[in-house]
Image 1 (cartoon, rainbow, N blue to C red):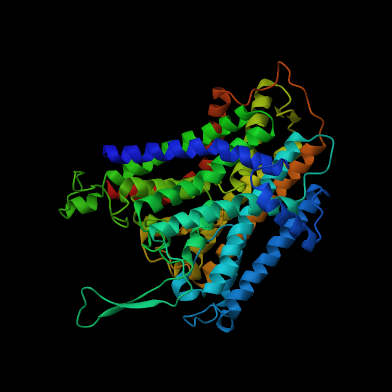
Image 2: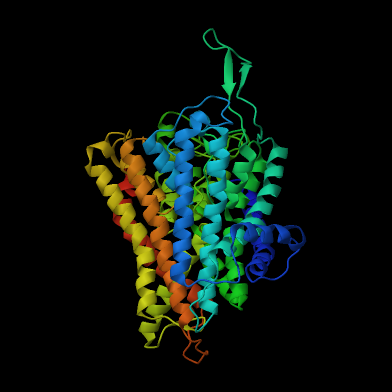
Length: 575
């Protein structure tokens, strides 16, 4: 890498970590019911929403009631998105006259956007009407993100409260997440993106003459639409679903280096701020900084591996006489599948950030990364999407690993495990184990079924280890609610639409329910005062221990599968 690439990476982390504290403090005030500068404008709107919906925010729920509310609301959202797609040919805001989406694709997309996965087996500009994009997909981008944030806040209340069964009101938590956090940030980002050239219009597609026409082709149809509003929340809500088929590699979705920086920053902004918010809400900001440090160490390490792998180039290109040496005029390295205006550093950073969070948007083709470069985003998903992670879901997933780390360390020294004044006992361990094992089982079983079935093998278009990697990546993405893809796999088929749809459902809701169960259990416990035997959970030693638990318990579950895919492919290329 040259000095400019280093400056870009350092500047990115500096801005991200600098914004985490003020935004995290603001979000803590929102969820604790304290006044903020937005109350004057949005307070009446919030109260009006409660009035017309009959919600009484002061009436709190136990964890089972909270879970039912989550499931009912998300289930209705899933059905609404499915119906919109199936009926879009008869609905307005469809200037291109697009027909109904196929049943299996509609199912897959409805599950995908309701579960905050945003896996896309279709091309947006040739499949979805403006109404389906706005009323279906963009709305789900807001409420699926707000659902994850609400569950996280309920989890935090379970830690800080004692001798009670109540962990908050889902409807109030979701409303505040959307109204005070997601909506204002999305408006600001959408306006900034429009200023950079991201399209936002209800006009029909434009037919223009080519600057360099051929005898056969003299004009081109350019897809447009209300993209900026969807791009903003897709990034901020760690959704990731693109308005256009090629996502943020499209020049009308991500036209400039500045728009690229804003969109990359937005991927991790709220997840990083939520970690600081956690420290504020539990009354000890050191706890938040410790978790943020563990996430950042893992993230930076894997980012370095991705950049190194891509900058090292492809020996197949060397054999073809292609110069991959980095110079002032040549970016060098493996530029296949990457936008020249972004280069290797920004492509690797985006790929690492989008899979560290449960975002899934792309500005380069992950399928064209070198084997170890592609292993990085795949492994980040397989960690459980906890390195920053999705909005809300990343942190409550990380807290499951914290519970295991505390429990194991307590057994090692012969003391009762405690975390922030709460005893960690068998029930919490069982639920945390479920949260960690469900994605592992979903990914590995799904991959095995796809490889053993004729329907699964029929659309694997690349041979050998890379074809295996594409299937493993697809189920890693669906089974951890990410949504990105290697894309060499033909996934828009009845088999993959159905199988990946179920994987997305399991990965989202079989984790939310155990997380809420832990919150309910912890909320009922008495607070245990600190003693000489209490394990400090904010020290460098605990950070190192937590990282070790994440790697040993989380990542090594996939090592045999990775050995059959990207690892052996790397050895084959460089033999």
